[in-house]
Length: 273
Image (cartoon, rainbow, N blue to C red; front, side, top):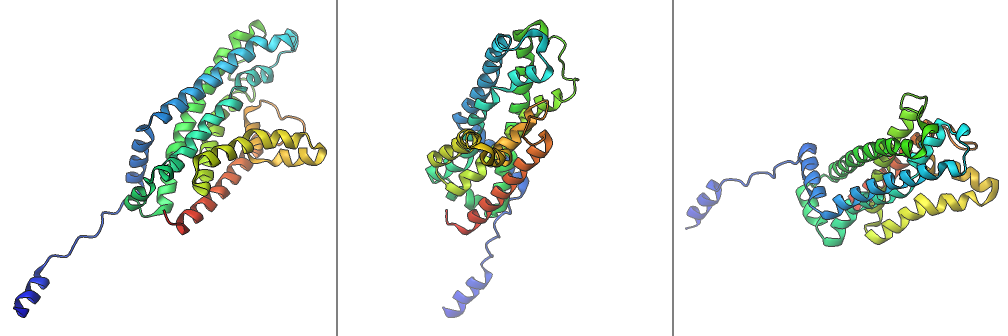
């Protein structure tokens, strides 16, 4: 009997190793998960309606405080992009919920079991949410520009995407929102709580820059380098007084987001699900 048991144990086939999940499979899984929840569609719809809706209102009211002869390309683009200030919150919520939603439901355990390589998992989430935000921001920014011009009227008729700085500012809405989505994802990975992450995003995007601007020269100096505020300079046609130039400001935002994502990855690797 002992010999028979040893023989059977020896003849038993070995269990195959788990199927390795590559980046492509992780991307496909994250894409499916993103579109399987209703909040994704609602976030993108709110972003589009907010950006375009505010562009309509800003376009109609521009001539109430700006003489028609003084309207420039910067004014037209400024009116068109004003809605991004509010629409960015919806993209921030979307980026945060990609990870905090899984922590809230406990699904993060299944996700990590399916994709054990946590750096690959976080990279896949970042790529997917950034791609969605990029397309949404670019399309809504372009639509907002096209809508704002007729709202302003004849003073804006001569302003086009080929004017210096206009295309960069309009397309910059997509680039800015793409980085913002990753910024929100990294924040959510660090905090692991939806309400706390959303509150932090509101502080970082809207409240802190406004508060810093009220603190005199020192506050304005800090505000100049504040990541989200610096990144938003990409949406301006001309460099604003006392602010970073558009591209350096965007690079500052992207660099800060990359650093935050690195911290998020470090914590994701050390923490239990």
